Image (cartoon, rainbow, N blue to C red; front, side):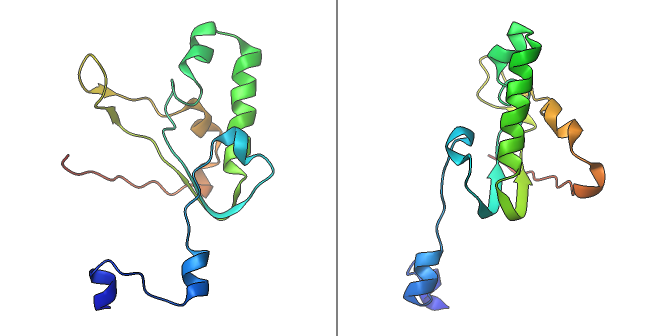
Length: 120
């Protein structure tokens, strides 16, 4: 236990080798699967992309929806869909974010909503 507190990894070499984080774009993830997947920044303007929303093009929006489907089907066991409630990096101050419209398509009975808050 103390080695973990000191920052030294604990466990066998096989366990340590199995513990990893893979960062991937949705495009790169096509055809791949992981036990746990986090899809981040699910706000309108990020996913779907702001350029797609500004273009008001149904074909482009459906392509974004297909990419969302790719993202959420990469998880074998656990899927976490996350979005910030505010955008603290906005040039006009802290702007409240709208969750991605694609989240509305997810069955509510399969969702468990968590509220995470804290000080910066």
